[in-house]
Structure formats: C-alpha cells, structure tokens
Amino acid sequence: MAGDPKGIQTVLITGASTGLGLAIARDLLAHTQHRLVLTARPSSMGRFEPLGLENGERIWLRPLDVTDADQRDSLVTEIEAAFGAVDVLINNAGLSFRSVVEHVAADELRAQMDVNFLSPMELTRRVLPAMRKQRYGRIITISSVGGMMAMPTMSVYSASKFALEGCCEALWYEVRPWGIHVSLVQPGFIRSDGFTKVHLTRQSQFGADHESDPYHEHYASMGPFIAKTMERTTSSPESVARTVRRTMQEKRPCLRVPATWDARFFAALRRIMPRAIYHRFLYSRLPNIKSWGPGSNQN
Ligand SMILES: NC(=O)c1ccc[n+]([C@@H]2O[C@H](COP(=O)([O-])OP(=O)(O)OC[C@H]3O[C@@H](n4cnc5c(N)ncnc54)[C@H](OP(=O)(O)O)[C@@H]3O)[C@@H](O)[C@H]2O)c1
Image (cartoon, rainbow, N blue to C red):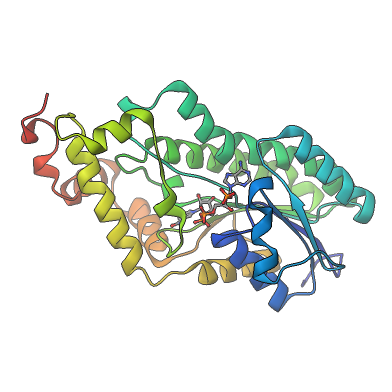
C-alpha cells in the first residue's frame, strides 16, 4: 500500500459470509496480498466452505457476532497476539429494520442500534490501542445513503447510520495524529440480499399486512419502490467492494466516500439545494404520496 509502513496487513472484516462483506473479502483476496480475518455470526460460519474459503495462512475464518463483547475481545486478542494489531478494520455487518417511527418499540430500536452502531463502535474502540501503538491503522465503516438522508419507513436504520457518521467524523479528527485513517463508505442501493432481508417490527408487520392500519399505504408504497430501485441499479456488491479497496489504498482517504451513483447524486443534492426546498422536493417525489394517511381514509 502506497505510503503505508507495513507491507502485508491484517484486515478484519465483519459480516463477511455474504453480500457486500463477501464481495470485499473476494476483492481483497484477488487484488492484494493482505491477510484476511473473515468473520460471520456463528450460525453463518458454514457458508464459507462451499464458497471455497478455508482457514489457512492467508485467511482466518472466525465466528464473530458483533454484538457479543466476549467474542469481540477474544478475537482481537488472538489477532494481536499473532500479528501485533488489526491494521485495517472493515465494519461491514449490518441489518435493516423497516418501520415508521410510531411502529418501533424500544427493544427493536435497541436491536437496530446495537448491530449497526454500538457494536461497530465497540469493536473500533477495541482495536484502537494497538493501532495507536504502531502509529498506523485504517477504520473503514460501511455507512449508507441512509446515513446522509432519511426516508419514510427507514427511520431507525437511518438513525443507526447517522450515529455512525457522527461518531466516525469525530474519530477522524481524534486519531489522525497517530496515522490512523477513518473512512465512511456510503453505498446507495446495491443489488444484494440486504434489502430483501429487511426486518419488520411487530407493529410494522401488522401495518404492512392490514389495510385498516393508518400507515398501511406508507409500507405498500415504499416496499415495492425500494425493491424496484434495487432491481434497476447497476451498482453491485463487487463495484462497492472495489471502492472499499481503493479507499484502503489511498494515502489520504476521504472521510466520506459515496460508493454508488445515487449516493453521489444525493450527496450533491444535499450540498446544493437549500434544506427546506430539498425536503419538499423529496416529499413530492415519494411514491403514491397523495394516498398516504388521511388521503387513504385512515385516521
Ligand atoms: N444492500 C444495500 O443496498 C446497502 C445499501 C447501503 C448500505 N448497506 C450496508 O452494507 C452493509 C452490508 O450489507 P449487505 O447489503 O451486504 O447485506 P447482507 O447481505 O444482509 O449482509 C449483512 C451481513 O451482516 C451480518 N450480520 C448481521 N447481524 C450481525 C451480527 N450481529 N454479527 C455479525 N454479523 C452480522 C449478516 O450475517 P447473517 O447473514 O448471519 O445475518 C450478513 O453477513 C451493511 O452495513 C448495510 O447497512 C447495504
């Protein structure tokens, strides 16, 4: 890596058994010499072997539920004992709840924040001391367009990504003196299983299923709209993985790296358009907006 003090580096990737995490792993295997610690939830570890990924000198396969403090600690301890430090942490694991604000219970909000925000930040805190000691490191966190703008029915997902963005922005300043680079890679819609695996909350499931629910039209309109946008996008996990690798290889990577065309479009729109106009513009573009709420004869 240009400008890096180390040749072969140790890269830890969370959620690496599928989707974007797997694409990043494959891209780094093909295009770098780095040592990869590929992690997945214990129940998903069985996916690696059929994919041709096996434990060896260059690849370590390890179980890691990011929400489990003991698993986080023992894995980083093992890596530090073997190689001194995690040189590059890629916080990729994430999940997505689909719900309007009124339909999220406290436990569901906590579950979303735990996987997408609290746990990646805990893992980051765990790897930082050794990175500081060696005066080198990279923290790459997969954010989202949802971390720069919020959409109806994606409130808590956006909350988790906005939180990541705020925390990583502060971290960017804090650890730069030790040669540690912090980046947020922001994909928009990509063709992956991610959005087909959305979690509905107890109440949003009811709202989506029952026409009598005041928010039924919100779900009935947004679900197909998101699915269609994902089908049509030309961005793939592989193209985002290339952006992650380039970010890793940059001597001075940007804090925010929009990784798909729609992410670049919305980042530009937010910069150029005054906020009040921007929100009204987006509101007017929501699918079937006239039929939402009272328009659908609901309360
Ligand atoms: N797909 C998109 O359009 C899109 C857009 C913007 C941002 N993103 C972000 O990209 C990242 C990857 O998403 P993806 O699209 O590749 O979705 P995905 O296919 O659902 O992959 C998510 C990964 O995270 C793992 N994961 C979930 N909970 C975990 C936990 N507690 N501990 C460890 N791993 C856990 C999943 O493991 P299991 O399979 O075991 O559950 C899976 O491997 C996420 O941060 C997501 O927010 C995706």
